[in-house]
Image 1 (cartoon, rainbow, N blue to C red):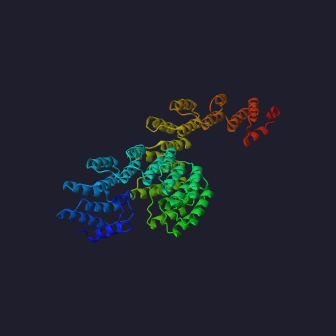
Image 2 (tube, rainbow, N blue to C red):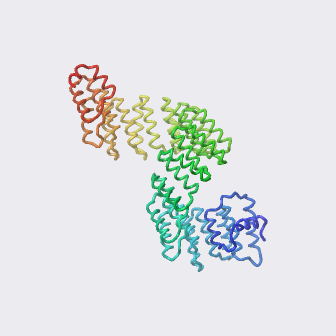
Image 3 (cartoon, helix red, strand yellow):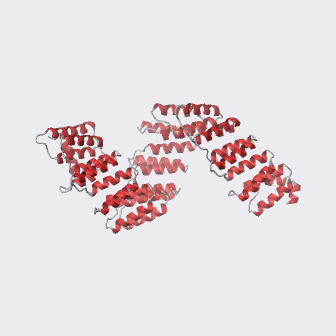
Length: 568
């Protein structure tokens, strides 16, 4: 009745299992199906075997159908399993608890955990008792769906009704909690797990170490790492990779490098994620030669670089201004069959724009779209920046108008970049109009946007607008930063409005932004330029009393004026 392929798959899926292994253990192995590639022909043969079973007289038991459904789960044919189970229902083949568990697994993989609970209800209705593996599947589905609280509730309920969670149950919950940063509860669950006599394994500890590293608690992660080694639990590639990530994120490259070497000494082969993290960190640190060395080592160990690793190298070359080498890596990755993604293209576009190579950036944008990749805000913001940087703000403005006509939604960076471009090129009216347009949209200006337009208005001598902007800033729930005040004071001083600048300077002493050395020097420069030597001398004394130092310009101005030297 079964085809050759179906027989072979059934044998291969069970050949490594002991004969007395329950079907539930086979199902539990399918919660995370093997990443084996199956051809469409093999899938069709299993479906064909299913059809033959349906036509057989007398019809075989549900167990035979369930075996084929299990094979399809292994092939990741989740939708097909649901379709075939519907056919079973139509011909009155009543499922058993194993069939229902397979259906729950498929529904969870298809992100329909709500339907999975409906099947759970059916299990009870048929008079069966779910196994812990069934609950593990539902808990895993809830966690993947981001419903961690619901997963914890289900965990508590199954314990309350007498089910004993196994290590897989704990691992799923612990991993879910760590992903949302609820590390305290995860650690508590680890303690509870030990108290209940369920021994944590490397997966449990790795999940917590990963969570600690992701939330910048790398020291605590290392303590746990030492603890598991003392318990003779061998760390695996996931454990090491999580720690290496945490160290790189904390800018502890030397420690990350030492851990990487330890990993190799223990014959733990780094995976593509491990290598990609190291390459990315080295490129960010500007150590492009070391990054190349890691990339070469990666290839030598038989691990093919992925788009993340290649993109990091491209970014590293861009950082050093070596665009010819960045482009070379870009072509190499494509030649090796690793397709660049939106992030890769955006990196190249960004660095070309910073070098004012607008034509190359536009060509990449066109190529990107022709490959079916949709540019994101960062891509367009890079191009708008490049046009403004190349003193072509009007072209950037036209690009924004064209984008908005296609339902593109500019963000605060888009507006801020364009406003800065117009201010830098002396088009203050356009910049101010854009800022007002921004205020009327859902994109509310942040303090950076306010600082840009305030600086522009100061340069234009439009201090009435500056005063208005300052009041609007407070209305928007923002607080001026020390940079905001420095822009205004510097602008007023340079335009000769020293009294107004000095008033703001004095008012700062009553705010959260206390004047620093820079502010004192700006005010002193202003008073010296206006020949108000007494006020300049007063500020110099005050500055010294607060432990601040005069900058080079202040020192030169004082040295050139004998009258103020006498006052000091």
